[in-house]
Image 1 (spheres, rainbow, N blue to C red):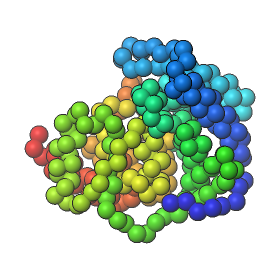
Image 2 (image 1 turned 180 degrees about the horizontal axis):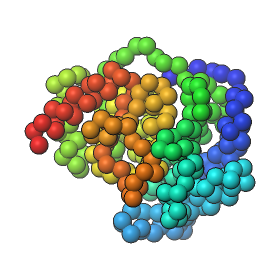
Image 3 (image 1 turned 180 degrees about the vertical axis):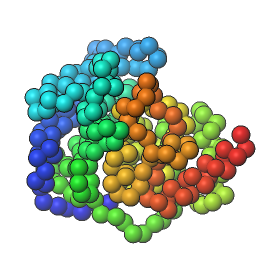
Image 4 (image 1 turned 120 degrees about the horizontal axis):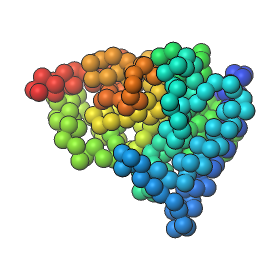
Length: 283
């Protein structure tokens, strides 16, 4: 949960706040245009996933804005990645995470921006344009939330009370049998409710105590998970692969991730991994 706080003094956050706010407003404008039925460009990538004029417009804006404040290279979903393995420190960007949510007229899409140093994410931003809200994970200290409509800052505080376990799933999970199998095993360990939402929005909901465990058995890319993992690790949770190892970044030939378990705290990790072990034992 978050508690009202004063404005931060972190230089990087102060530099990025107006930039990410403007990126959110560009996406909100594009979303309104799409929902109103205006002519809207949608293409298919080589992997058959959609990419829209909104993805490209935000990518262009953020690419230039980051270059204006930083000399670090940028690895973006909509950019080039040929030289990335030579980079020690760089920005990692998904200008529109949740394009399918966008196209289904669900405002559960996000902007994901993180700073990777070596194999680790050291600074992160997750923005929800539909809620005019930005989450920051500074290099030190607890996550911050900024509602730019109200110009209101809040800081993260752990909520000691734990109610029923909340499991976050993607909208498409109902079509994939692994999720039903996992939930069956989880049900032998604890009572739970299911919260369905798209994209990195679920990571934000973990910060808001609306999701405790987020299992993922279908592919993501590094720009989908980096910011969320950073935020979760900072509050005592995390994101690990299906063998229990935290994700590392820019260390492989591929940017494609395998499956993962994300969890809000160590208690939820134990439950999540126990259910996974039960599931894996049958295969």
